[in-house]
Amino acid sequence: MLIDFRVGNFRSFRDEQTLSLVASKRLGDEHCAHCIKVPGLNDRLLRAGVIWGANGSGKSNLFKAMRFAVNLILHGTEPKKAVPYQPFAFSEEHLKSPMVFEFRFMMWDEVYSYGFAADSRQIHEEWLLHHEGGKTTTLFERETAGEGEISMTLGAPLKGKRHPKVAALSTVGTRRNQLFLTSIRDNIAADDYGELLEPVIEWFEKHLSFIGPDDSFVHLAELIVADGQFAEFAGDFLRCSDTGVGGLSVETTELDREHMLGSLDSESLDKMLASAGEGDVIVLGGPDGTQIIVEKEKGPKFKLRRIKADHRIKGGETSELPFAEESDGTRRLLDLLPALYQLQSTCKVFVIDELDRSMHPNLSWEFLRFFLTACEGRCRQLVVTTHEDRLLDLELLRRDEIWFVQKNSDGASELRSLSAYKVRKDLKIDKGYLNGRFGGVPQIGHLLGLLPEATESAEADPDEREAVKAPVRSEIDESSVKNAPGHLARLQEKNPVERAEREARPIHQMAKEKGWTKIDELERRNTVRDAARKRSG
Image 1 (cartoon, rainbow, N blue to C red):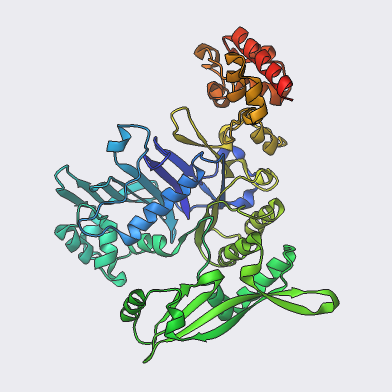
Image 2: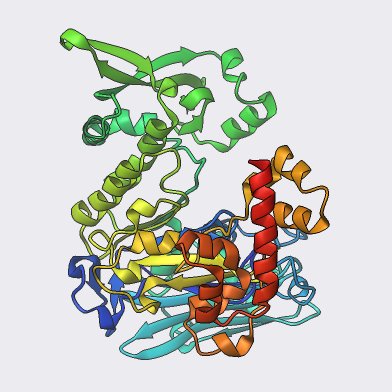
């Protein structure tokens, strides 16, 4: 299970931010079934984390940060190649600083922390810690000097006879652009990882999966053919979701090499066949949601699998359609169902970016409720990003399962949990969110002012033109918000006129309440803009 994830200087995350799935103690037994006790720790872990944010706020960058780190761990960097480097772009200092990533997780009742710091040239630091009974032990620590000289330190647990090959590899060392954990995975057989490293590598390999907004499940047709229970589950879920699909089937067609090359060039196909062993089966994604199966025998066999959707029509008859012709939302749902199916019986963490992509709000809500209800167990978690305010429901989620991402005035993303705010249990969270109380919503100016008619009406007066083209912003006396709650302290980034209009309060009243300055100027500009709107309307 994921305990927390820390990231810094990656894309929009300038300062280090932490997504924590540790349950807040002050929330007591709120949705207690959502919490799992961690052996050896006083904390409980949450089974879900849901992250909201405006477009461009950075919520997808959190997903990309986790996926980036795992890809670097599992696939590494080629010799003499640069480490993929994606620092915070709006700061000269950070363009020269390393990215930082750290996972704290539980595997087989053991708790670990693994992290690293890297730039395009090298891995600056890397560490693996083991937590047990309130005690933290360093398993290994690596530092790379400016000239590329690597210093490796093995902790006492890895120096003994239980991990001889790891100890030997540490003396040989690794490349400056390669993680030591990746070198262990590449150079040592799984049976020789040892009892302390085996759960670490297996967690990253098999227990942490990612689904992006445009990802499709490549093995979907194979899963429907091989697992009748999944085929039945998927068909039932689609039918109960009112998609019009009553069941799924798979059509298989033999292909020759010439037709196979329609989706793969000849050189790539030859390399793929050369690397495969006798009797191996290779699965490739084909066009329009199809699946290409390559069975390597004496002569390779090629098959095309196409998923069909059964539709029950009037009179009880059934009609089939290629699943590629179903709606985007239906296809998105089917691509997510293998995750929901696996989480009912398998210890995994699924991280999904834009859960609600193309799906109806009610369907997104039911998907999350199904997981929280049907996938109970102490090793199953779901972390998702979303725009859907329908999910901001305290009858569905705990307050510490709800997170918001918002960019500050420097363009840096900040991550904050709803549990950091003092809110009543009966508060309409979705309404407060849309009103900007928790951040993570776009601050939209007067878009109608961009219409040609409105622009032309303001051409006679520069003040009117300014009022029509851009939102009005105020300066705020810092002393007036110094002791205010965090969301009020960020009001200097907001538009007080638009905020006043939304909350149906006069600008002078809001100014008095919030301590804004230059109010006379604001009222004058507001009057000018209203006059421009009247003439344009």
